[in-house]
Length: 100
Image (tube, rainbow, N blue to C red; front, side, top):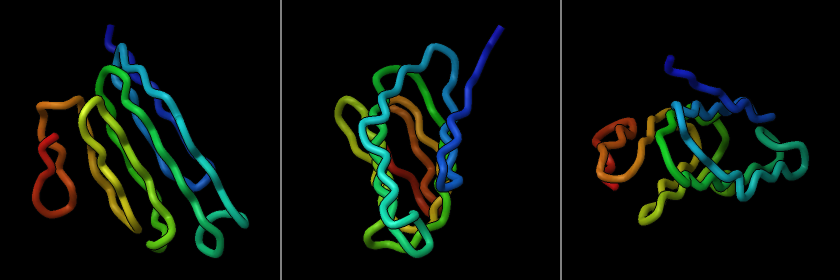
């Protein structure tokens, strides 16, 4: 059986964890009520496994989401929907791809 879990954040963003995935939420700060008036700062470390994410719209700067792997950082500013997986895979990012 393949299982998944979805983390729902207060700003409306979602992170889907595939089976046997380990992440660490290092930072998730909502300042002055968060977007659209306040700010949001997030840093998620992918320890092992695979994730997919849907980051809610927020003006940039100062709003940022960061996903860290062992050797890469994916930083999302503003409105963006994308998917990420462990390193040595292709990460589609709106137009083009990011290879970690």
